Length: 258
Image 1 (tube, rainbow, N blue to C red):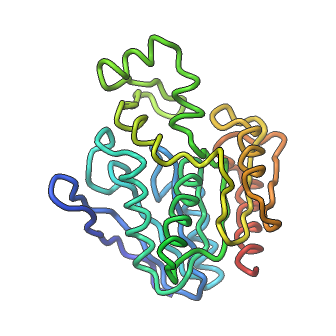
Image 2: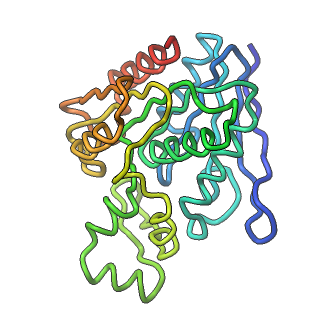
Image 3: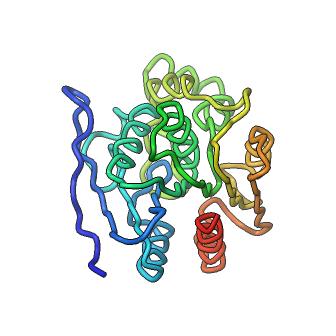
């Protein structure tokens, strides 16, 4: 089986035009689509492991970088949840059949938003299953804004940006007023979430970024029976250890088998 070749997908128009970097592996379906996390990219550990599984299993697999991430164009500080949702939906349209969406952290929120959008359009590409790793649903509000001290809120509101220190990089990253305000138009908690397909959530209980209770809240918003939550007692946010990767592959394989 040939290896995926880096290609670019044009998204948006005018000042919002950008090029997304894409790696697409041919194979049998349902295709696996990786939706990475905030500030992550399609060549990170879990994404590479998913592609390796797809290669071994003869599965189709699609990875891409959001605008302002990895090898894609656009500036991170100019992007919002709306931007990255548009990116995800554009990448999904490259497929020929309904996929399994695998979303990590922010990608878990985007996977749910993309699923809702595709169902509303009666799209044949609405997913057949979701695997969500530490899904940061509504994170701009529930995990950022509501947790920020007043001085940080003031800085974002008045200056338009706050440079947030990162536990994963020596460089801080911008949290913009646009990101926070746009996120409020995509909040899911408060009403039932109806993905219309099986959902498997993987969540570390030692996660400092997305508390395991957040995953419980998501589960409570999924009224269907086909929702599973696996808690990893010693798991962190990334869930990238060998045993975590094995768990992810089992979840993907199980939900793909339906």
